[in-house]
Image 1 (cartoon, helix red, strand yellow):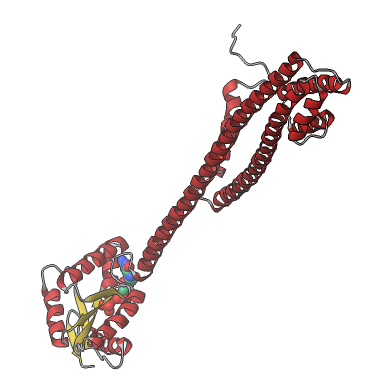
Image 2 (tube, rainbow, N blue to C red):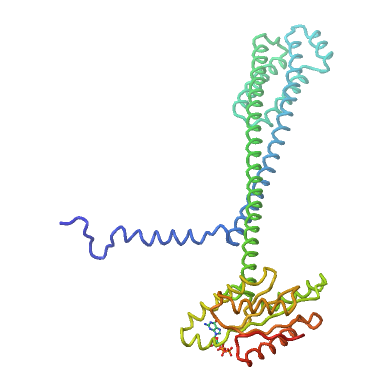
Length: 388
Ligand SMILES: Nc1nc2c(ncn2[C@@H]2O[C@H](COP(=O)(O)OP(=O)(O)OP(=O)(O)O)[C@@H](O)[C@H]2O)c(=O)[nH]1
């Protein structure tokens, strides 16, 4: 029996994987690092992590301060306990008069007062302490103190071994507190280092985030500027020939005329050129051949006029040229040279006139149009000159 055959109703493994892969792809496609949603989510996450770090730092600092206060208090109490303990040696004196004198010189009215003071210090240390090993030491000390207290109450001489044990326990407590202090110092240093690492991480993340969004913004701005430039160009360019279209012609001629006025160029001319019998050509050779002819004609115009001249396709087979700093007679000579040149495959008619600087481009175009009309009426394939 074929082991790979699937049971009825049970799908094969590859078919199972397909929807999973689809889900993964869909999930990944929803995470677009450049989308506004991602930027917003990242910003919220960054603010939240900043807030967490601030709260964490605050509590850590509070805890460190509390620990410091407790440690200081414990150390002071221990020092007091050690200093007061030195008075205990007066209690080992069997003669009560000397005991009394010794204690009085140290400011204690009676052995009981000294023992009470020691018990009070020990109670402070016990109250502050949170470590089990220290608790053991304080309990041992308390037991010693009880023994000393009992002996003092019974007016007995306190033997050396009890005294020694007290001092041994005291020195053990001192050592334990010091060890504890160095351990808590280490803990504090670790906490401070972790805080610093966390703060630096958040700082780097913030700087990275801000730089990243700024980079994104500049990218979007560049893209937007390039698109705007492209659209503006598209709006003023004739897609077939690459020359200016009528809208581009109108915008550009206005600024050309203003420039001519600024530079006191009082001479300039406009030529309107219309291909003859283009309909016939289209009908004979087809629209695409007509398009190719229009493109060729545009190239011929570009090649024959100066770079500073403004050339546009203002209608189907109608072109306009603005020639700054050029009289209409000179413009006519250029147009006729093109018309009769070997480059030109098409016959065309042209109307030419001087720019009427004070009246604007519309008036100049109307006059040039009249001259073109004359050229067409006179039989085409010629140019006519009109005075603005
Ligand atoms: N191939 C092509 N033809 C165009 C385009 N724009 C306009 N035309 C054609 O140009 C022809 C212009 O015809 P008319 O206005 O009668 O001009 P004409 O045939 O040149 O006649 P005259 O100007 O009087 O000599 C029309 O058939 C339009 O369809 C274009 O972009 N491509």
